[in-house]
Length: 276
Image 1 (cartoon, rainbow, N blue to C red):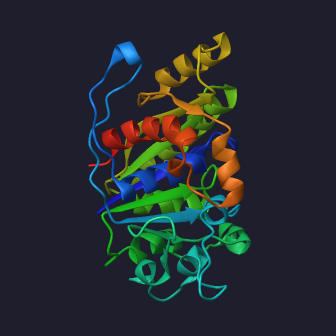
Image 2: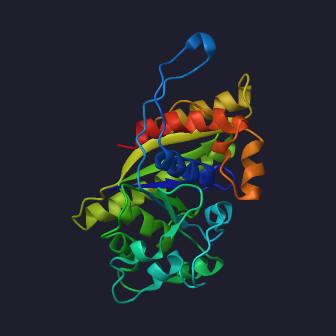
């Protein structure tokens, strides 16, 4: 099972869009295609359908709202895992809710009171999410992280994940979000090294989105170049089209619409590079 956290320390940088897109495309699968420069088409590696669990670890619950995930009981969200003081082993399997979008996709929802876990000071509380993933029947876990500088929520994702995929927009906020996230990841690595333990977390790269299609503006080009100096940018740059916020409001998947195919294709190319 592969576990991937999607992270930025800035808001509004398409972090949730990236997490949901990676999870859904992995669940659906995608046929490969060769690059065709004459038609402006980039290469896409084939992606076989996978059993995916998408975890909403953000108190804003943007992923939960978008996917319209409703647990059977109000307490059955990721906060129950983080607050379990005895043994959280196997809880992820119990709390994962089947998504109506695809038979291969399940979601562990968030709730507003998840922010209460930021004050959690119990010993080893940050290990509960990793413990909960034990026995999970999934090929891929994608974690939509909060845009925090650390704390129990971020530490829980870092301990549970094998790799971090940074999300950024081609803007100053995108640069700042990656810069802050990298500092947090590096601090985590130093802390683990001081304890004599391997961190186990790798940088998968940066998924960058920009408004619309067409030519990049000077400010977008400058931001992308700054991001490249921080970490590898996973091509292609993803266009942000109006259909994405429209379907989010409706609780639908943009990949089911013709107008969303350009966004889906871009994320499919990224998925082919970051999912093993």
